[in-house]
Length: 74
Ligand SMILES: [Zn+2]
Image 1 (cartoon, helix red, strand yellow):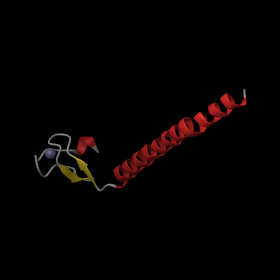
Image 2 (cartoon, helix red, strand yellow):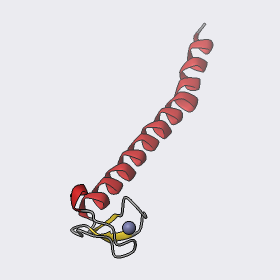
Image 3 (cartoon, protein in one colour):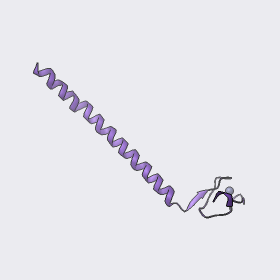
Image 4 (cartoon, protein in one colour):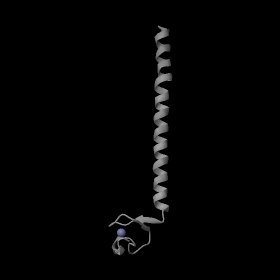
């Protein structure tokens, strides 16, 4: 009865362990991507106009595209 036990251990090592490693790698990759997106969002110098969705400077008080007042969104 030694052979079935060895077979079980081999199956675990060669099937479950790589799947676990791939899952860990995917979670790590997703975390890195989310982190980069958040950093980009925080450090960006522009924002989207809530009316016309054009890209405008972060500190803008009015939109140069649709000319609407943005002071209430600051
Ligand atoms: Zn606008």
